[in-house]
Image 1: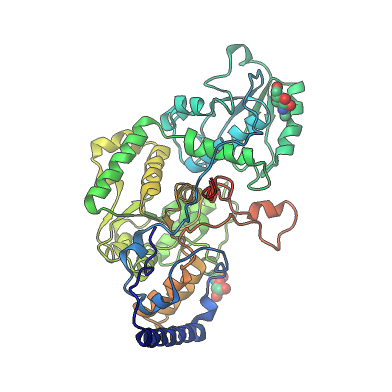
Image 2 (image 1 turned 45 degrees about the vertical axis):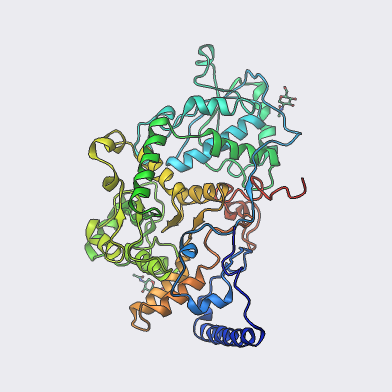
Length: 498
Ligand SMILES: *[C@@H]1O[C@H](CO)[C@@H](O)[C@H](O)[C@H]1NC(C)=O
Ligand SMILES: *[C@@H]1O[C@H](CO)[C@@H](O)[C@H](O)[C@H]1NC(C)=O
């Protein structure tokens, strides 16, 4: 990859000094302005070792972002996926112990959970029965495993790792099973201890598959098995794969490059998070009532203002519009909206489409007829969004969540494709200054937002560990998810010396 600016023709000696002095002066002037006015807005995650290649000199011309700065992947220094087992890896052996699994959650929670269960079955020497999918979550989807995933491919791809069967053998259907809620964020030794269950039972039923395996401190071969399971074996079913590809081709035919925007602005999301910023009183009340009436949402009283200031709210369509403009994306940019129904409908979306008229949805790209097969299956439409998001030039999630994490992780795995993660807390602070009339949109906003996101574009970095102030098992919860960033285990440096 050629680094922009590397091959500048050399200037004659005195000219070079002049130009450098001007640039140095301009740079310090900007730094001075920036630090005196905005030091408190600097993203506290900036010290991560992302390799951003924007040089300081480019700050002077930051409003005219060159195309490659907007669309190209960050430099990844030849890093590549590495999922092959080490020489110590023990292949699966024929087993007559069985593990049945009920996956829980939405599509991506189930996907990562299933990949974990493959690893758990391997650790416990079990034969894995094709998992049952969640039909009760608010996704209300009756799809089975083979509706969403390519079952044969799944079984074949993992042949050396775990024996997988479609169903429990008939003679075992009625035998008593050990019904287990495995502990969350468990280690390999936990599952090795669990093999004692085989003394009494021939079948273990796992009642929940999400987050049953720790993110860190697992053997390299287990981590790589998780990657093989998620990125190679767990392919979507042929109808989803091929239709997803077709939609990507149609997007490319429209404009070449596109942004996939995961716009979490659905009613249930806003109700659950208690975020009513920018909504009418009636809408806020509607969300409050929905929260009140949803039993499994434990937190009922939420102060929307505090929630938003803490960076805990999805960005609104308007905020996303301002954000993308400030980053330098031109109004003509093609944006695919990966989302369910937007709360407030087209009226609220206007605040985004007024800035970016080239906004498209599944419904814009495909005919009613084509979409009919997918529409009553939330997991299948989510799978289409997943495919389109992974393939996009730029992925922007307006909120964190299982889908955003899974897409980011797979994009890192596939070559650190650009993923821009908004610093919601910092952005809210800036947007409030606009609202109070203290600042206006334009170069000020652009400069501050670009600086804030310099190191949030998906460049290679190691997975983050737990928050330092956390103690005991609570630490595990605060670690960055393995599937959000499988580096270093499944992403390796090039072998330079062979
Ligand atoms: C799994 O099976 C292999 C071969 O049968 C055996 O060597 C190994 O100890 C078993 N592992 C566990 C955790 O039981
Ligand atoms: C919510 O929090 C803000 C900021 O802390 C405060 O000013 C406001 O009064 C609170 N609102 C309610 C309804 O408690």
